[in-house]
Amino acid sequence: MERKDTIRMIQAGLLLLLSVSLVRGQPYVVKGTLAHADKGKIYLAAFYGDRFSVVDSMETETGSFYFMLTEQHKPGVYRIIFNDLYEGIRSENLFIEFIFNREDVDIFTGDGEGGLVPYFAGSVENTVYHEFADYEIRYEERILELYRTLDPPEPFNPLYEASVQEYEALQRERTRFIDSMAAVYPGLYVTRIMNAFRSPFLPGHMSHRERIDTLKTCFFNHAAIEDPLLLHAPVYSFKLLDYLSLWRNDTLSGEQQQEAFTEAVDRVMVNVSPDPALRSFVVEYLLEGFEMLGMERVQVHLADHYLDETCESDIAEMVRERMEGYRNMAEGKTAPDFVIRDVRGENHQLSLMEHPFVVVMFWSTTCEHCRDLLPRLHEWYLEENHIGLEFVTISIDTSHAQFEAYIRSLEPRWITAHEPLGWEGTVPGMYHIYATPSIFLLDRNRVILAKPVTYRQFLRAVRNPEP
Image (cartoon, rainbow, N blue to C red; front, top):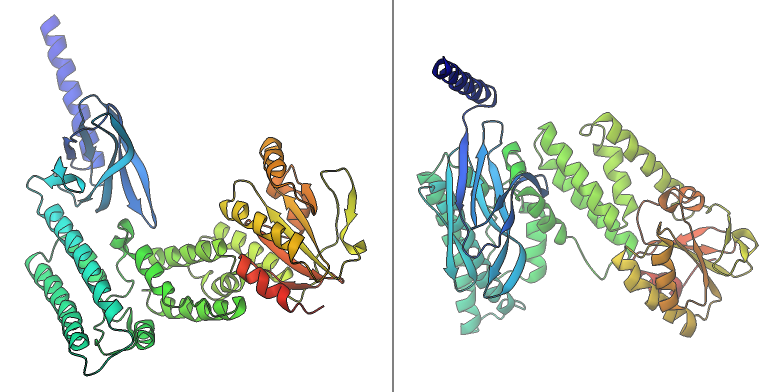
């Protein structure tokens, strides 16, 4: 009787495993051994959009790991993340990157000159992926070396002409390499990645400016943003950054730079397929990036022209509210009046300040850029302030201890206040603050003259302020 019960239990267990397999799809195994891995957690992370997210983890004693994936896990780029212990030195958050394309993946590592070298037993997908990655590294190193020798052009110089020929030959060789790989392995996920990184041919005799202008126009000609499956690989986020870098120009004013990036955004969106997931990712990625740069006009342009067609209603509504706040606090608008108490217990009303110019700055100790910028602004305030400008700096730190510690080290001579409610405080809310630092240069009538983000932009703004 006991044996029959045991058999029934085994049968029930097998049926349960079968039912789980039917629901989740065929299981795939990602396993291997990491040389020198420290005991503890090993993580499996998947890529989507512009970041990796942990999808599973396990404890290891020997560096061995074993994960199961199913049909529900999308093909794409994954990472095994671990800590390394070698010759008594511990290194944290090392990773092995690989492609999962609904096949078993067996990974082991060996020692190489640059550290751990991954090997993939029987995985053509990952062998080709790492071959392509190694090829790209060598290609970029050599092409950059040659690029430095090509500007300015030196016709009739034998060394220059030799560099031109090699520069052009390298580009043609890269195209042949991708063509051959795509022809031999048309069904691989890595082939999608390689095709997405195709680039236009640039004649070696071009000047630097001509190359930039050509790439602005032709960058997406051979590889538009059109494959939704590549949202699961670090492809489109890289291409967007690469393209936008073509439009960055340190000689432009803040307003001119925003105009340039606005044109870049329009050119990007023309080259994004109608696929909703792709367009949503691109718009949200650009909005987040230009928010970090403090470029409100570009964000408003994105929201006005591309937001409704891509984002979910709740996200779109939140962004629209934020864009309306940016419009209300644009240059030429009148900044809200407020009364705030400084760290000495004195009250200050903005509209009653008699200085010809006032800077209202919101900052936080958790903002690295703020910590770098504040001492430079304070030095200018003490030594170069010849226009009668006053600073009102408002910390939105929720930790009073962190705020006090920083103030003790800086010892500011200007008006310093602390908003303990942080982003939710009254004055940050009135000024629609969503990022730090946020800086407003005002005249005596509280008209917003400029909104610098960097020290250079601040110097440019105060050089010839217009009250």
